[in-house]
Image (cartoon, rainbow, N blue to C red; front, side):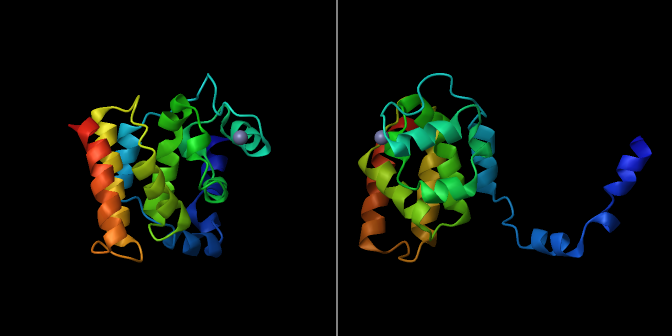
Length: 171
Ligand SMILES: [Zn+2]
């Protein structure tokens, strides 16, 4: 039985298109590895989103019973502005999912919305110093890699504000 399973999973059995698509998958960057190391996988037992509306219902349904690394990319992309709807506990637990999506697509809308959120609503309560420093690093990465580049005045302002709010926590 074991031998049979092993044989069916050998690389010769993997369709060629799968092997090829794996080459185009974003590889895990050092910053993504730090996200994985610093943010524990944790299910939120309390309130995920306190408000009652269709958007918050969808958030609750999707995030209930799963950890941040299990949140589908497509959900994050279609809920790029949802971070302020999360309870603080859920924000701490699930922010890394939005951070990871932003790392994978630093010029995308999730990344730009994330900078806005980190800048204008710095809810640092509940994060550790190490987590806060990873958050600042992700913001620096986005500001360097997005369309506007590190010298863009808005990027410079955003980054300064994020470094002030989150860097204080990172100590
Ligand atoms: Zn709502």
